[in-house]
Length: 95
Image 1 (cartoon, rainbow, N blue to C red):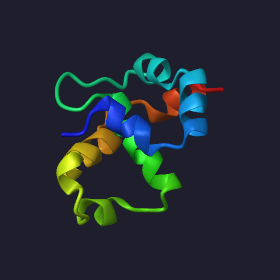
Image 2 (image 1 turned 180 degrees about the vertical axis):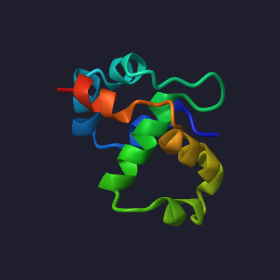
Image 3 (image 1 turned 60 degrees about the horizontal axis):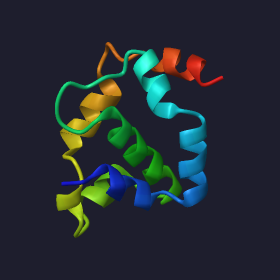
Image 4 (image 1 turned 60 degrees about the vertical axis):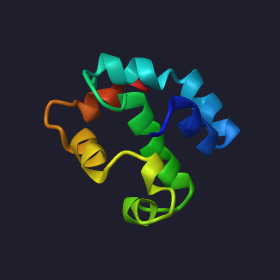
C-alpha cells in the first residue's frame, strides 16, 4: 500500500513546499472534503497532483509495474466525483 511518505517522495521538493505552505490539508478539511476510511484525502489529492507533473494519466499509472503501490481506480474516481465534496469551495479557500 502507498504511504504518506511515499506520495511525498513522488513530488518535486518545490511542490511539497508549496502544498505545505498553502496548507492544502487544512483547506480540504474546511471545504468538507473528508474520508472516514481508506486512503486519506491528502494522499489522494497529492497523488492526483503528482500525475499532472509526471505527465501521466491514471490508466498509465494503473497499468505500470508499480500498480500495487497505489489505490485502485475506484478510490480516485470516488474521491473526485463524490457529490458532497465542495471542490469550488475548496478553490475559494485557497485564494
